[in-house]
Image 1 (cartoon, rainbow, N blue to C red):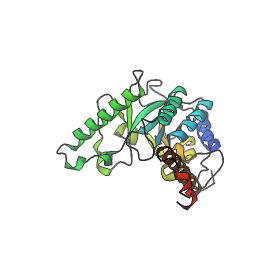
Image 2 (image 1 turned 180 degrees about the horizontal axis):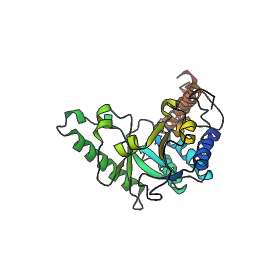
Image 3 (image 1 turned 60 degrees about the horizontal axis):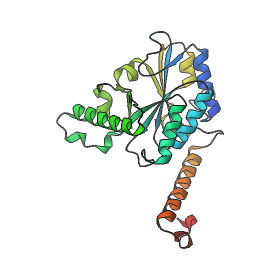
Image 4 (image 1 turned 45 degrees about the horizontal axis):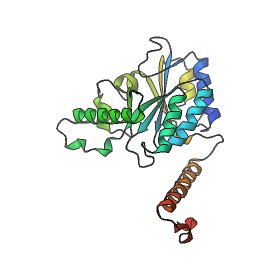
Length: 255
């Protein structure tokens, strides 16, 4: 962390420093049910998985080493990963085996709620359906207990949705009553270390995105470039399976 700036090296070591600060400041890591600790200083660790389940699984390995558990919110409607494919299911199992929770990351833009006369009811119904589908895919009687909204609209943030059996991480309770801090777009809006160490807040709600973290310090441009390059190579390899001989007709580097 650079003094005087809301800046952070998005490395595993820096994330470990956040966890260390939480523990030193007396915070107990809990979940959205807050079942472990009813009082005292509490912190929820939340991860939105927007781009890569593989990186989320790697991050979950690291958190296990730190002896903390988090909630990983995963999209069913992602253009970047397929919840049903084998690699995704292996990553999900890895996250669960590391002692973490899987929640639903819900993307309202996949629906036309603006045309529903009862928008909130329609959204709650869609969330419940996606949660049930996620539970069926994961199996082993797994229960989805929480949801986070993917790039929520102003209307959604203000609606304080109440979904039967599922905790809304953007409810007034966790978005307003708890101190919320996020690293969205690889940028902290506030100094997370100052917030932890200030002693002002009994309850912290900390959102991080595993995609941005790595062993060494890297720029956003570098991370995005390598991610897109890997996706191109993966798509090309899949094409070779479907269309044998394509590698002799296509120059991958020219794409």
